[in-house]
Length: 78
Image (tube, rainbow, N blue to C red; front, side, top):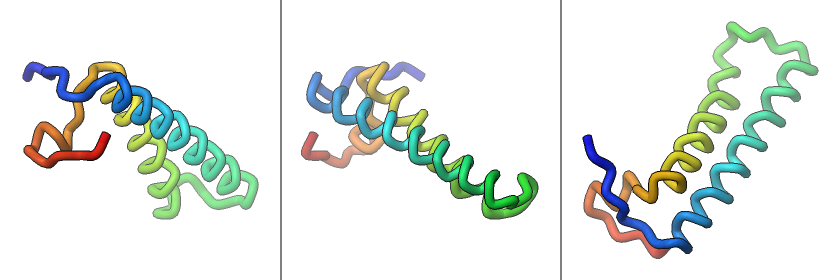
């Protein structure tokens, strides 16, 4: 699968900022869950892992210049 660049510099910057925020918020949630004593095997750990995963994917989109939503044919404002 080839990732064609389908976003401009503004879109890349926005996705990078969004990804960094997502990873940061996910890590804060993970730290809060750890300090609260919530066990790692619990279902609640899906929340910070999903937020971190989404942030990492957004950083990947910024790095490659490829947007998954645009690749599906939807027009995004940035």
